[in-house]
Image 1 (cartoon, helix red, strand yellow):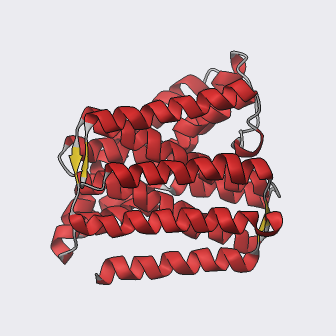
Image 2 (image 1 turned 30 degrees about the vertical axis):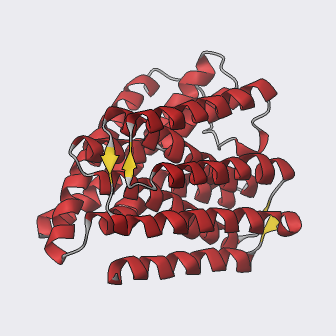
Length: 307
């Protein structure tokens, strides 16, 4: 059991480092080839920050652990909006804009509703995964048509392209894939040892670990006074998790989840709706509103573990 905990700690570190390397090196490579910051933010950087969720979700789906697959994405999104966004807002109030609230926030609500509908029978079929992927592609296409990434663009690293960025990207991807695989295995063993369901371990420990790159990006944003980038990064990552990561997982391997998992899905929907409402009130996410989001996430974690 001690070895499993060591593996969890080491693999979370591997996910963090690997995700950071992917984001930084991929962005510099894209810049080198003349891609716009809009394209970088919506494609390479978005994929990079969601790489841990992708690795864990796909690995769990292929091994028949659908509860960890869906639980990781749902848990990561709740963690992003609760602990990370709420924590960042507690440090400094985050100003929002009409575009961020209505376009990106509205899209996040729609994607969550779509997931609720698809998982209402506790199954995710291949065609449903295709619909999720098509929705993501359509949304990105709409943003590209607008030619305005604005509020949802993620923070890009400083510096110019060097030859070391290519091996750094390759090693980063390898770290993400390897760490994701062993994290799933170790978390499953820990869950069984303590009598916890794989859904609980997926929406808590694994979800927190795979949200490390989003946490790092948002923390950097708030420390540099770029609060809008912090919230835009988290909403964009959540959209990619719901539509891209789960969509691809379902295409590769249709999934079935436990009936007890549906409560967390409804909590995610409620939290998403609450976040969008709070961002609209006064066009700012205040410190007390951030504290409310953190408190909700704490209560939810306690309920998951004790339930």
